[in-house]
Length: 145
Ligand code: HEC
Image 1 (tube, rainbow, N blue to C red):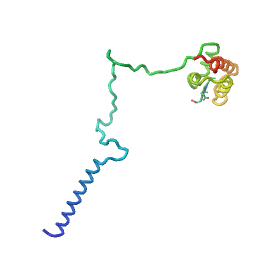
Image 2 (tube, helix red, strand yellow):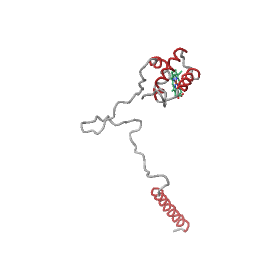
Image 3 (tube, rainbow, N blue to C red):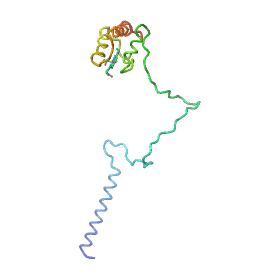
Image 4 (cartoon, rainbow, N blue to C red):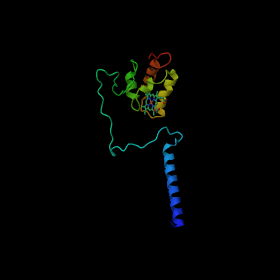
């Protein structure tokens, strides 16, 4: 065999050996932060799937109820309808009940903030009624639930 060809073959053999080694090392060497690796399952491309609805049987431990659309009940009393009519245009009245009990002056400021800052179209007489209602039911001294 010619010397150069023999040398080329030897180099080729060495290189492919090295390539096989690196490939092996690549698959097995743990990489930092990677707990497991692998290929994504091929799956049918272009389709979205969700599991069929599970109808709970008699042996079920729990059942998931309807999606809640929660809006708080406002305390009963004069002014309640005015609040419902004017304070649920932009957000639900849950914004009132989810506040901690607020001092009377804060409710006054809050209603004026809705009017002046956020542009709530509320007449003065109704604003007064709303403030009185909020102060009657939603201050630290008056809030019941
Ligand atoms: C013109 C629309 C609009 C109306 C009407 C309105 N609000 Fe608001 N309200 C807002 C906006 C905007 C925010 C702040 C946005 C947010 O945090 O989601 C807000 C937030 C609030 C908050 C949370 C605290 C705060 O200051 O951010 C309370 C409480 C509240 N509103 C009470 C009321 C009451 C009581 C009324 C009736 C007098 C009312 N809102 C009417 C627009 C309105």
